[in-house]
Length: 160
Image (cartoon, rainbow, N blue to C red; front, side, top):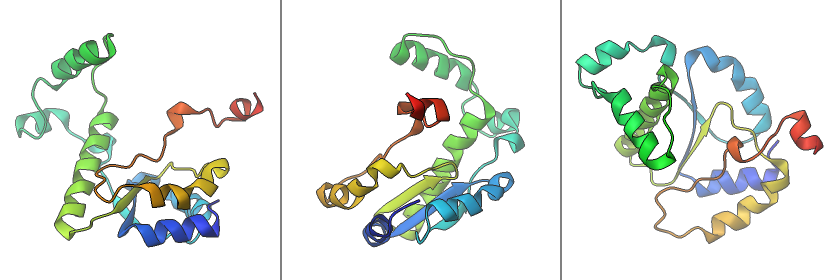
């Protein structure tokens, strides 16, 4: 759960705080509200991968017809390994972020915090929020606060 100090820092620093979710994940809201108690966020509906019609999106030019080839080439070039074709949910996540960025631009927001519906505050780092935000340059474009891939938050991960 966010400390009152961290909540105040985030609420005061950002013009808008958006929680990105999809309709079938709305059951997560009570946990988010508990973990981010007092944070003034707006729920933003993203794109649900289970509802995407990939052939239709390719036909309409929303995504490239050769998206899987592009993704494979990029994965070979940047990760030096082949990967499976893009999954619907990967396309949905990218589409959701594009949609949310357009919303931010259309509404003239300057400093926006985007939380995904599986975000969990890391208690041991909460004391850093206020001081970290003071050190962010005025002209920042993207501030990445963290992600789970760097840490194992499971029981066994914390047990080590």
